[in-house]
Image 1 (spheres, helix red, strand yellow):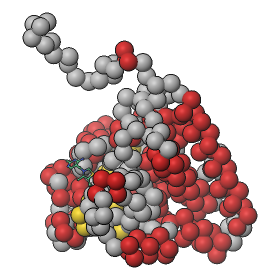
Image 2 (spheres, protein in one colour; image 1 turned 30 degrees about the horizontal axis):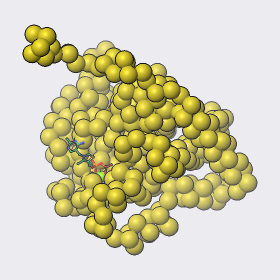
Image 3 (tube, helix red, strand yellow; image 1 turned 120 degrees about the horizontal axis):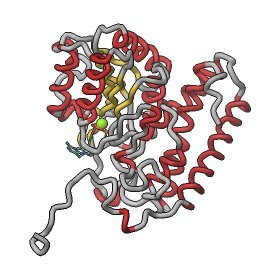
Length: 335
Ligand SMILES: Cc1ncc(C[n+]2csc(CCOP(=O)(O)OP(=O)(O)O)c2C)c(N)n1
Ligand SMILES: [Mg+2]
């Protein structure tokens, strides 16, 4: 179900935020039941960043995602059934079950890839933007990455090239306060958005829990990019509710890298679902009951996605080496 075309922007943004939340809750429940193999990097708590930014894009614009990418991809309108099937390693998944959540891409909606290598999506986005500039397509590319990625060489090299060539790219850093188990302030020197000044491009900080504030700064950055005025660095202050990977306690035991009160405060006072709902009610755009009906329709969509993903078959073993972009090197016995 999507009311995005008819609904006022704030309502369609709520719907998108809620879809991300519900998708993640479904993924967590499947993970807890042992149905999702491996790890899952949940986006809960950060939904307003993806939705605010993507609401400022045109359909033809591109998005380069990262390892915490479910929200970015859903905000662009990805098929949640195929996403969930991919997470379960099933044949009807976006990558025929061969890639998992870290590699989801959908060329039909210009998602140019999630990426498991921290920071590596940034030069890919800049490359896409270079292509668009040379071919005068008028498209803009957004790169989403975390605070941790700003300490990688990729970030410095890509932002420099984007700035010097005035490429149509928007660099969105989701500062969720931690990179794995390390507080951002222990590893990120200075202030992330202020680094833009050294490259001669605008840098802006925004409250990542406020979807309208995110949309506003993103719209300005997208406008600049499309007008040929080059990149913008946006630092969205946000928070991930759960571990670096869901259920990380099983790995790190009682090691506590963030205070319980901090987590509780973000959940109680800075929840983007609640904040967006409150705004819709305050502006009398919809009633509580109408919002509940949106929630119910999304919950049904997630139940259908879960059924679809669980019913989908596993890829056959003989497919293991298909779609893999590497050479099979003959072993000594065959040489
Ligand atoms: C180049 C590289 N180094 C280390 C890792 C392991 N790793 C995966 S996610 C992550 C933390 C990234 O933190 P951040 O960029 O802040 O994103 P967040 O997980 O907070 O969304 C690390 C260190 C990796 N995947 N790639
Ligand atoms: Mg982080």
